[in-house]
Length: 138
Image 1 (tube, rainbow, N blue to C red):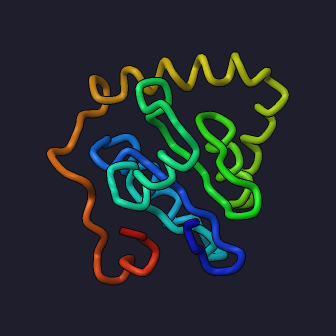
Image 2: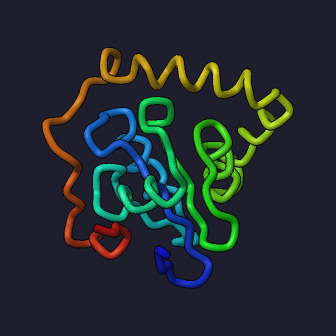
């Protein structure tokens, strides 16, 4: 069981993906309520959650949102729930919840399959600055 402080959400992301890292920087910038923590899918915590929820990383290698009470959300649902938690105006993206999940995830998967080609890839996971270190789990 992954322990998180009360009221926190854990975002798991591809630590070597430039698009994913930019997205995490965006969330950090607009997380005014300080409700998100982060870890790379490649980290020990990320690997433990992948194993615990029996996730096939060949099919799901994207953003995951974890809460101890509710478990795991992934792909477009995770992204939209993060946007919702960021509040207005980001929460307006939640209008896409009216789109069926299979269609949202098809679009999400298309972007995910091409993310390295379009946005590039780092040689190693992002290292948080000392100020942000408390927001990241190993």
